Amino acid sequence: MDFPALKDLSIYYQKIDLIKATAAQIQKDFALFDHDIKFSGIASTAYQELYDQITPIIDRFLEINSSNFFSLLYAIDVDERQLKHVLFSNEYEKPAEEISKMIIERELKKVIIRQHFKSINPS
Image (cartoon, rainbow, N blue to C red; front, side):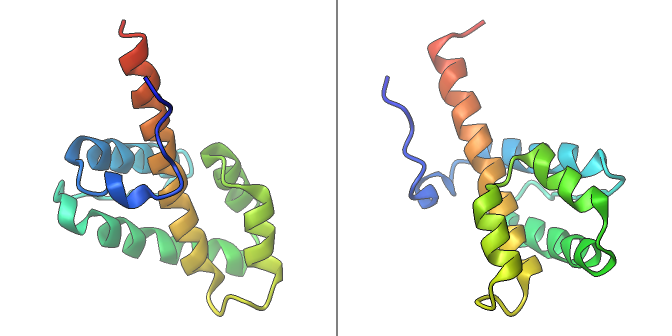
């Protein structure tokens, strides 16, 4: 079985099992830092639903320069080089929005990879 393609994540956006697992992973990671993320279970609105909840949290973290911010991103395993680019370049008017996208994409990738290896080695 080939390793799943992770460059273009759009091929996974309509797979409800992946969407639900991604939402659950986001909920789990944010709960570690006392943030409750809700998910309706509707795949077609999942991205916007999660994005709309994550962005204000990230914005707050950025405003107060919280160490929890970096702990959260470490737990999620957001690409550090990409994060630095977003934070320290003038390319992004609203870094919280870009970081929210990065979080959702990383969480989806983790779910895809986990599912891939689970299908290779079912328990």
